[in-house]
Image 1 (cartoon, helix red, strand yellow):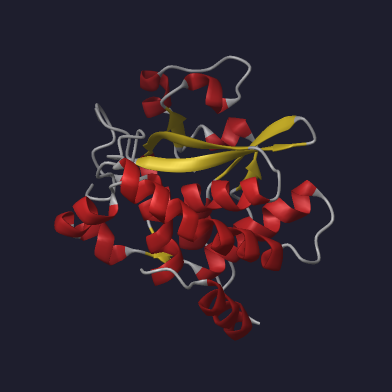
Image 2 (cartoon, helix red, strand yellow):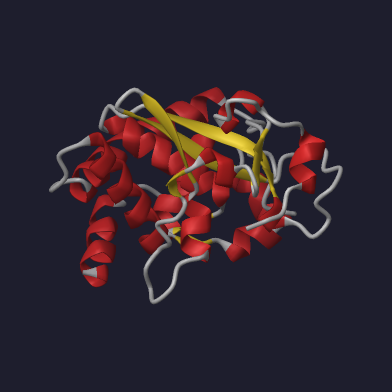
Length: 220
């Protein structure tokens, strides 16, 4: 099944192909209008076909969202090369579309790549999503007083309710070749122990906590 998935992705990909943060975290990509339009036109047919392929046997939005989450975590590797190469980051981080293109063509991504690609695939299926930038205790030893967000994840709207998910964590914490399902529709009261959004409303807590309170919470 894994070989089939990789083979199908190769068919769809006909387009050219704390360092992780770069210009993407916080939505600070540099948009070059002409290049972005060209990239988006190339990407549209790819994401549509891929979204339909992954969710072919799904009926509900929840099933489709989980299929995308699981497929991306299993088939898109973590991009260690991009994480440590600042020159490459400057080339890739010209737009969100460019980040998605690299994730598709290279079959590897950083947190922003997973989040942007999940959003784009969901959009093709009419599922509303949100890309959330913020702080994660899993991405740095020096957790306190970070000025710049160091992680990106998603929220997805299912049956009128928002749910949190993190595909990067799903891949890194998987076992036996299978992604962890823990980070799909995770209870916000557990999610907040490792993820603090720039905009506190995206924590989905009844009583959002402060950044300092977040730093004092025990990690899970």
